[in-house]
Image (cartoon, rainbow, N blue to C red; front, side, top):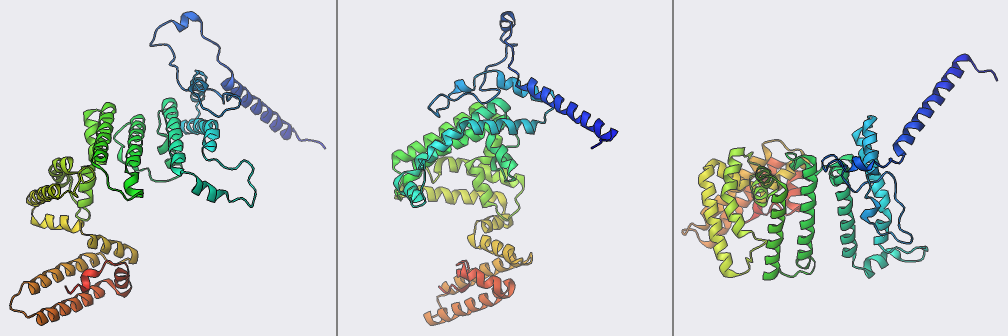
Length: 418
């Protein structure tokens, strides 16, 4: 077969290109020659830092899957990353390479956590044995511990948050990154690790309450307070005072409660901060997860403090805005909003239906407080209120949405005759 001149030229160019790529890969993977002794002793500022880095998978210890920092402690990996950057390799590609390599390195440890049968037969009930014969919480703790190791290595090498990086690549919302955007990426990674670490401690403490249906003891509540104080202290060690203030506004307990309370009122920043400043001292003293409200005396003081707080918020917001503030905390208002979204109701459907609820409540109070009505007359009046409320709410929402509201148990206020 005779090749054309152009075919020969293209073949020659391709061979040259492959040779060039091979040379680049060889240079990247080539071991680094040790520095002269006088260069190593130049100064602490110019000396290359030792870190958890390597140029390729280190040889695992014979007969064990145990991970040791010594397997990563060399300057080869940092040099490998530097070389990739020096030839213009995209930063995202570098991240992908390093993260995939760390995953591969630690995969044997991850696989060894769950004691799967080494040679599974089709007649063996492996899943039932695993879930019934073992405490799976221990596996979860080991997996979390391994995950923390990975996150530390990635943060040290690349200055990025491993969890956030993976969520972003999967196209999933990253709750923390969205709320910690005021921080540089390295600090975001540190904050997330702190929150997860203390979250694990809190979960372990509260397992008996959630799984065993046991109330927290006074000692447990004291420990819970200590965990949260230590978490705040560690955050203060990472963040500047200004950053810590921003953190509290984005992720703090009080800010979360204020956002929940202002649902649907389109609060301004000024309104939010005013309510926040009123709630913060109250929450610091009366956090229900740290205070035993089962004690009658404690609960009485908490209720009094709650009344005083609501009075201050009402005075601060004014009557019209406070009415919207209260509405946002009503589960019935939220249920109506969910219903409107599901059935694509008009923009006026929710405020109209909720207004009927308020009118029905006020009408029932008038009937109940009227001493001139006999019990029979009161009962008849309440039935008429329920019937009229049902009619106008069904007309506002439509039959399908109205019936759905009743099926979900969110419409008891419509027919409440007593």
